[in-house]
Amino acid sequence: MADIAGWLALAATCVAALMTASNLGARVTGWGFVVFTVGAAAWIVVGIATQQTQLLWSNIFLGLVDLFGIWRWLGRRARFSDAADAEQEISRHQSGENLFAASGLDGMPVKGRDGDVLAYAVDAMLACAGGDLSHLVIREGGVAGVGETLRRLPWRDVRVRDRALLTNLDAAELARLPTVEPA
Image (cartoon, rainbow, N blue to C red; front, side):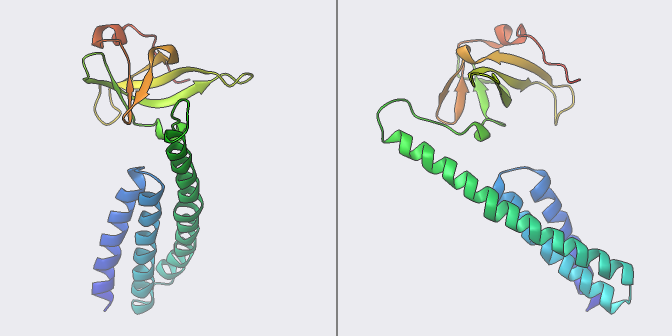
């Protein structure tokens, strides 16, 4: 029994870690915490069966943390995400411009004038006093965060369409945008 529970715990913990670390949205992260809870329960079984008190108590604590993660990501954050989605949908059926949630910018592709993906959005910078959108911080190049360059893309050069950010810049013009250097 302890051997099967140990393998289940290992698999669940590895899968859950990938799900939460991938940052693929509130629901995937929330379900990652569900899988973490299964892993913690299996580790508790192993702790009881093998009389490993530290394993038992650490996973009781981690199971409680996982329940908090489920509430936060499948409850609270998913509700916020659903509300933003609903507002976007409402805007499609009203006169005026369609709306999009700023929270959806992270990872959104930036396509150049030829339609090729040149970069990906990281965040949006808004003015403190007036709330106007100044520019996007975008990332280009590199692999898995190594060697990528962060740049400022002025909002005036961006349009949002079909879950992408469109710009009239080409790759050479994008490469001339100012860089953003983390402090």
